[in-house]
Image (cartoon, rainbow, N blue to C red; front, side):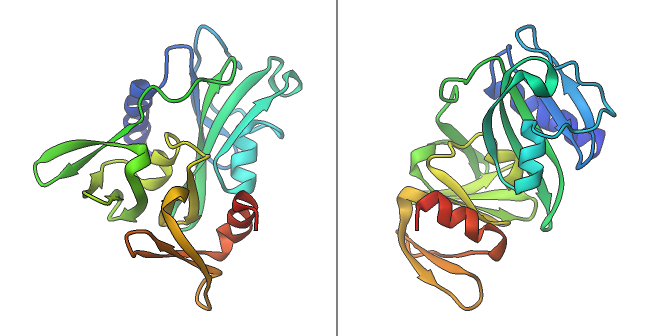
Length: 216
């Protein structure tokens, strides 16, 4: 991951998380960036290997966002971790992990701001039907608007509530509330018919996680 990419990610993270959040960025084997907070410090140094049982380890192993309480036997202190794998062209490149002293309350904002032509519009998360990777940006679709967010899909996933949004494909995250129908599909495992009529595939990679999450 390039230093410029890390800087851009950190600038966005600072806007969403309180000051008592530690942030770790890793590749698939070791940490490449760490910013401790005053409330919780795991004493991570760039170059340290990713420890088995950590939030980052779980996100990289399962290939999906992880929200988990981690006991003190991993780093010496307990923490609540929110980690998301960074995936490019279907390949996992690393993970971003937000580290809290305890489980955080809901995100500071329930809005996502998208650009449409030369203007920006704040949209409530619960109005988003789906998000799609397009040209290294994220296309955001609602019933009333559609526009682009500058972060890619994997980076943006960190800020979405896991009880409402689910990754179903390397290119798609959908809002469960807007799924009209789930059909079997020969080209992918399932096909989602959204309430706006959009047809979105569930890929083989995410099929088991998708079924477990929706209980079928």
